[in-house]
Image (cartoon, rainbow, N blue to C red):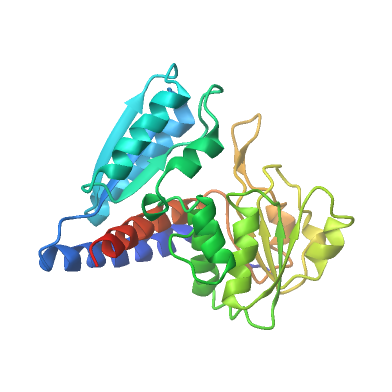
Length: 284
């Protein structure tokens, strides 16, 4: 068996086309275009690339992009004051503060300061809580994108066993909640899990997000399962690889995401979806 690749780039373009149509419908009704503020603190090269990609996606779908860039000397009090200003601005629908932040700024304080109605990253405890209670509003972008990828592969979820490897607040934990919401029986593995290999081996759906190249071995994968690799790691030779041993896993899985070109494009696409949804909710 050789797994069929799940093309995240193609699926993300479908989502972006859907968002663009939604923005056009909104404009045709007389409403303004949704507006997304991206806040970048400092000059981290990777963060600059991520923010640029988000701005380009905004241009593609017709969302107004409002970039803010501050020096890495910005204080936490100054950033929180800026967020307060954006929360009060009726022309702003979404606020995204690019992580990581400089050491003097507590990311949790920043996340919790953003209004839940403008939290298009879906990280605010209110929005995570809504997801846990099965009434999602703005959903964490990467797990939301993974669900779209699984649907594109024909996943049915119900009566299926799903295992998430990694328990971060931004991916692993909300990913388990998303899978449960979709109808799967979900387990989340973390650093205290006794036997991660055994958990993975029983899974019909495996989502891996640990930030360690090749952490999940190919022989752990159940034959015929679907593998979603959220990880992206740069090796010493410059290659980008995921958290799964891709070459070995694709000989056992039915479907698998490549790295790069799998989950990455979906995160930006779902950010656009969240921004449109936030704008529509605010004008109802």
